Amino acid sequence: MKRNLSCDVAVVGGGSAGIAAAIGAHDAGAKVLLLERNPYFGGQATHSQVHAYCGFCTNGDDWKQVVKGVGQRVLDKLHSMGRFDSFTYSPTGNLYVPQDPEYTKLALDELVEESGVDYLLCCQVVQADTEGGRIRRLTCADDAGLFTVEAEVYVDASGEANLSAMAGAPVEFHCDQSGCLVFRMGNVRHGMDYSPARIKAAVEQAIADGMTGFSATYGTVCRAQDTDDYTVNIISMQIPGLDAATQTKYEMEGRRQVHLYAEAFRRYLPGFENAYLIYSGPRMGYRESRRIAGEYQLCREDVKTSRKYPDTGIARGGWGAELHLGSEDVVFGEERGAKYFDIPLPCLRPKGMKNLWCGGRIISADLIAASSIRVMATGFATGQAAGVAAALSTGRGDYDTAAIRAELERQGALI
Ligand SMILES: Cc1cc2nc3c(=O)[nH]c(=O)nc-3n(C[C@H](O)[C@H](O)[C@H](O)COP(=O)(O)OP(=O)(O)OC[C@H]3O[C@@H](n4cnc5c(N)ncnc54)[C@H](O)[C@@H]3O)c2cc1C
Image 1: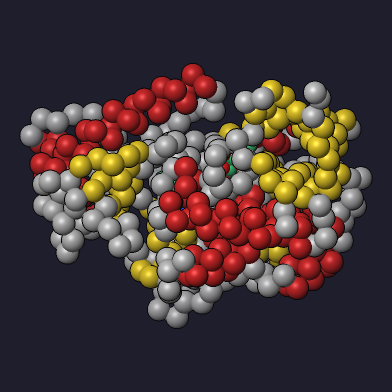
Image 2 (image 1 turned 180 degrees about the horizontal axis):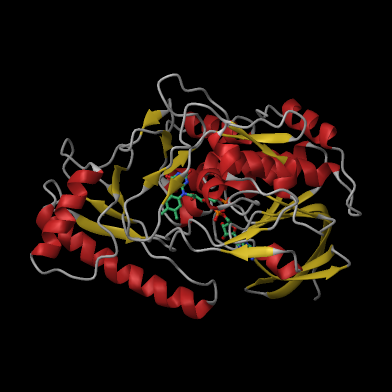
């Protein structure tokens, strides 16, 4: 039987941006369908073991919270499960929220179930039919076959700008920043020195002793809450494409390196002597791939000068530039500071498209700005804005920025 679903706003991708987009659009009055290809929500937080929500606050001693709205509802849900109390300092001295994928999956299930949004897991959007800059319908695939989704307005929160690319919107592909297959190790001793400098020394010792095939010496090791497990974020590979052949090659190479690093840590990183590998991924994490070419491109100067957009700002970025350029050490740009910058609405709008909004790490930004706005709390904020914009705009492309900003404020977002 032919399946044909319809709604006001269809959101593609159930990561940080997509969850917030769906709830934001629903709370603004739209009938929403959220489509996610994985069997759970969370995006890279749950599917690539990105173990901390960054960007809720500015950095520094006099930090302030800059993301609330749906992001705050995620924190409240984690708090109700005993998984979040307060912001903490990461090993690199930034404020973040450590998260454990298994609890985050459950928290997001509950949040989405309670929200009134319609949602489907295990369903991949594979095609978008577009006419005159207007998306008419999506084709989705699940294990039962193909079905279509028709909406008035669409949100791309796919992390890779997959919907934008399928719809013919202008997109750019970049891989300056490396991807990483994060892995988790158990039976690690606490209280030892797991600073980036100590990790680097361990890998350099492994190399000096003849072990080969590492992609980086800089990395972080973070304790998974209330366990003897640590997640390791060190593999560093610039992945040159999104086709299956390229992804296959890099997923396999990542897995080979997971075992290599695990062995090097056991040998050279005191505290890991008896540690064992629990799991990797499941999927390689991408720091960047496609981004849209938007009506405005957020730029280095916006981040560096903490620029404010009093009339068009729809989200705040509190995380400074953080560049992961291949095998080099991570660069915290001079743009990292205690202040925040505004993200203006035109960054969420691909040029030439009438009924498409974007949220998360695919919004229009240059390399420096992208290395800041990609963090997941900022993703909640831009996602919520994309959802509200979708709910309050028409399929013909008309929208009222002041009304979108007012609705975001009504929903408790900080703008
Ligand atoms: C190694 C690494 C470390 C990082 N460290 C941090 C950190 O410590 N803190 C932090 O805040 N951020 C960190 N980031 C950045 C952050 O993880 C991402 O930028 C963020 O997840 C982007 O959120 P998003 O919602 O835009 O996309 P994603 O989290 O990628 O979510 C996109 C979702 O869309 C779904 N999707 C895609 N295409 C389709 C389709 N066609 N049909 C249906 N569903 C689809 C995907 O399955 C996915 O669930 C890190 C990233 C990496 C790679």
